Image 1: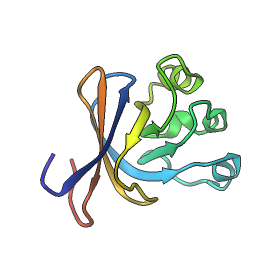
Image 2 (image 1 turned 180 degrees about the vertical axis):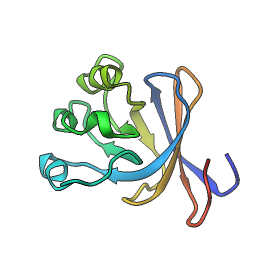
Image 3 (image 1 turned 120 degrees about the horizontal axis):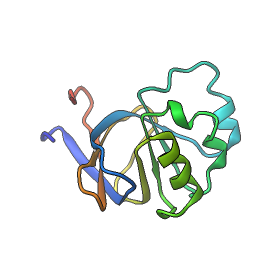
Image 4 (image 1 turned 60 degrees about the vertical axis):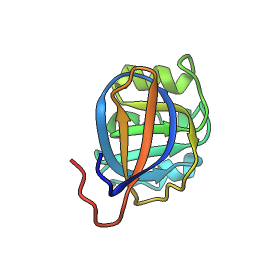
Length: 126
């Protein structure tokens, strides 16, 4: 990661996936999922605050990755994430701010700990 990227949290890495980057979008309830319409989700990193976010199920396979502030390796979200082969950070401790539209970089190289970073406006990530 370059100096244009600021670490904003860590969490449990569900499976090793190297570096994953995309655009942050918070999902708080079913209405957020229903409001997507035909939005392109392939670059979306979904941020959620509950481990049992079953309302993500219809869009989960289309997401770039998921960051959840709760959950464990045995949670429903973890199981769905593994089945859909979507990188997932669980029990994320976000010490910085992540807003909708931020470019997020997930360092998923370590099999245990994931690092969540936000790129500065205008920064280019690989």
